[in-house]
Image (cartoon, rainbow, N blue to C red; front, side):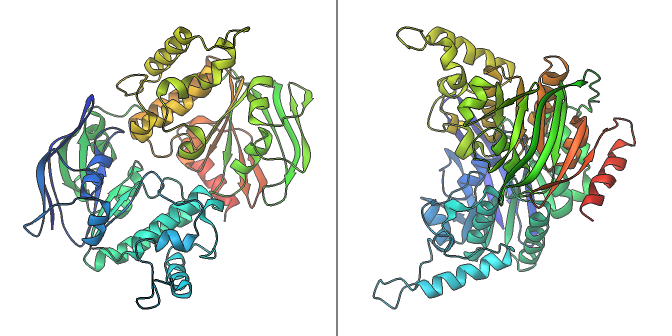
Length: 502
């Protein structure tokens, strides 16, 4: 048993954990839930040796557990899959998996690459990742990197396994593989802590659940004692709002964006689509189906081999994201906020203001108007309810959900006519998810923005969109021309979407 007794931890301006006590037993998967900033990741990092508690103690089977570092935790059979990917981009997949377990020829210090690669391959097979262990990890997708991180944790053969949002970037089929692995590991007697924002996963895989709110423990329950609404109320302190998203202002006579036969090998196979004024258009499919790949070709982040893009009926040539933003007013909220969407070592002020700098710079001296930049950042923090100590706080210090809000704020400030949201609610809690859904809906309904929503979350895409294009194998394989919002819509549309993958 792992016991957490009266743990507290404070950072400048915030008390992340306040007198938290929990018991985690072997032979169980124990979920840790709460809104972004509730203290989940902080508690995981204390157990994983990354942070030291300000107060309180930890025990394993009544023996006090004192950790000096993450390496110390590994030596005591505790391993962790972080919400933020911890990979060495210039190293191979095998090096990342075996980093703390490198094998040499006896005492020579010469690495035995044959054995290293062979062991790494074993754990890649375990998670169903069909890539060579010698491949540079920097060439992998976000989902593949996440699976490598999971492989690394499994390779440690730990007695305590900490999983912080392990399913945030992987496909449904990969989630199922992971759950089968975790159920098998549970039967071997290890302790598994599981942080997720996807409540359906809690009921599918977990035995117990502990809820944190504002750094305090709200309660621990057996999963058989609660339902979804019980957990939501524990997490946010009130009942979840169930909104109806019916946008009747879509002008199907006004095509704002049209893409014809967009093609690049291994990215997009001659894809064509239309986006109407004030529409929320869905791109649905599994991770790697071609949704993000098509979006990146449209905004000029990747170079097309053939195909045409028309904006308000006129053919355009988008050469870069800068072109997309400043010439054509098309914004893109990336799915990979850590590596592409944010400057983690910079402040909220810089991250939120970066897209408006050309608008607020002196035309002669090119200096940024600091007062305008600060006012804009403060307005966005207030508008999106970003939980921060102030606009000068580093973005890396924010919770995942608040980082996502900063990423969105950056593009809202640019006042784009078309915004592409790529998996906008990955890794965010139920409260932030509700907020982002309302934001997207109101951008279309009230502000008359045209939205492309890329999502593998079926309830999300049915709830928000007017039409849906379905992707598979880098192709658009179907279109749902009208997403009804009546009480039977979810069952009808989910069945229709499912038929494309049957």
